[in-house]
Amino acid sequence: MPYSSPERGIAPPSDGGTPLVEVAWVWALFVVATVAVFVTYSRISARDLYNVSGTGLEGGASRALVFLGYPTSFAAIAVVAVIWERFRGVLEAGAAAVAVTLCLTIVIPGVVDQGDLDARPVNALAAIGVGVAFVLTGMVLGRDGLGKTLPWDRADLVRLLVGGILLVAALPWLAAEAGFYIDAVPGLDPVFMSEELHAEGGEHAAHAVHLGDHHGTDGVLLAWSALALSRVFPTLRRRGIRIGLAAYLGLMLVYGLALALEDFWLEQLYKRDVTSIRLPDMIRPEASPEWAAIVGATVVVAVFVFRLGRVEEPGRRV
Image (cartoon, rainbow, N blue to C red):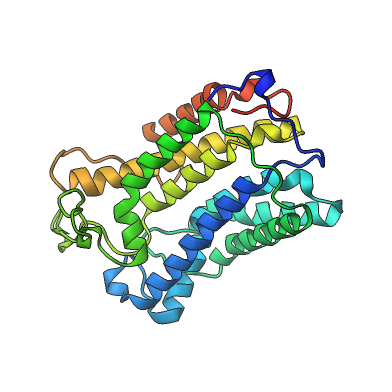
């Protein structure tokens, strides 16, 4: 996604702010996902879900709180960076800094435990950070509006292609998020494993794709968000924010793709016996070859795709 030529460059809005259409799109994505998590975990028994114990509205609220922390807080940090230049005064900037700090608590070991996805008090910190970021975005949108929509170019075709591939791969997870198995849809049963039972290593047989949220879904949401926000970060005026956001979006994209690949490989290839190779879990950062690959791929994306080293002047597209 190289820079557009100077004659095709997009000048920043006259008010000094970056366009916010993509920011609104990212928030809409996570609002819909959070509502789906709340509804699904409220109406389906915990025994049919994954590593939760609550039921009813309490169970739905519990899992939605955890979802606000992971993965929503990662996207909220990127959104705050995008809208930073539109903040007015110390109070708004200070609130934004608090929001980012609270969101970052999600990376503390033990805050999110994949073996126990019931909400705990510590999960509320990142969720509060997401809430503050959401309110700040609403204030900025109410005051300044969405701004002008950036024109499309060839790089957006690549974004659409990657996003479309992720959408197809995510169909079983999106169905599970809504509370049903994708193979209940006529014509999709031969394509995706979903309700079929699978047993491994002496464990009790379980559905190939459990109902509820998947880390594959989380990865797709993060990748979609990174693709959307990568359209607008070159319009930011502050070079430090542009460079930092380019690197962060590169990490979001690579991490999201890694999560989606691992979950799809497990459920649609490994459990189908297409391959006996199982990809390692990449949810938590650790000193491992797979995380070395994620870091290396992030550098490649940031430098050669988002052109981090050439983010010199605002108003150009990548």
